[in-house]
Length: 81
Image (cartoon, rainbow, N blue to C red; front, side, top):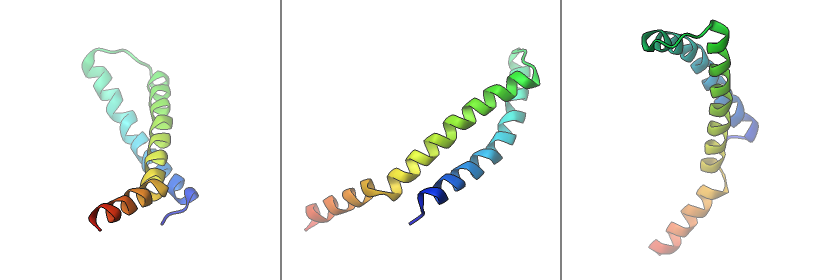
């Protein structure tokens, strides 16, 4: 099982790599959609969504690695005998 810090670092690394791709993709999508945004505005949106993504990834990882999953497993064992 991964530690809380390990979970956070993994989620952060994954999301930072995604940030680079998101910045480029969003710039292209904005241009194709006729949305005018400066690089700074694009970066602000990408950083905001990155923070949301890190928090979401961390919470989901903790749920699946933590007591919730253990509880579900024990309930299945009880049901199956």
